[in-house]
Image (cartoon, helix red, strand yellow):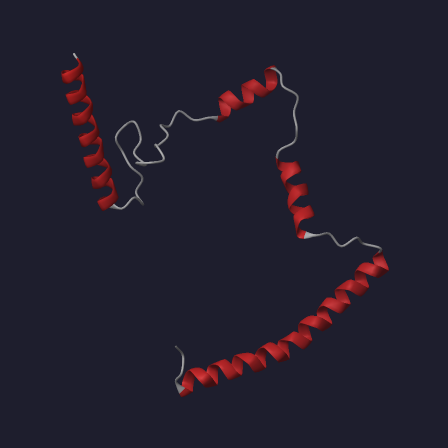
Length: 124
C-alpha cells in the first residue's frame, strides 16, 4: 500500500534507526549480563516472575471461619449485569454501552416475554 516516495524514505530511515539502535541495545544487554554474572544473580524468565507475583497476591489460606468472613465482607451489594445483555436487574446499563445495543437487548427481552406468554395460553 505504501508506495509513495515519502513513505519509501520513511521506511528507509526507520531501517537505519533499527540498525543503529540495535548496536546500542546489544551493548546495554551485554553490560547487564556481566553485572548479573559478577553478582551471581539468577536471571529469571518472565513467566516465573508472573507466577511469583500471583502467589504473593493470592496466598493459599486454609478454609475456615476467617476466610468466610473476608469473602462475605469483601463483596458489594451492587447488581451484576448479565453477560448477554449487559443490563443489570435494576434495568440500568453501563455508560459505555452503545445505545443501539441497549435498544436491541430491550426488544429481544420484549419478544421473549411475548413468546413465553403465548406458550402458556396454548398449554393451559
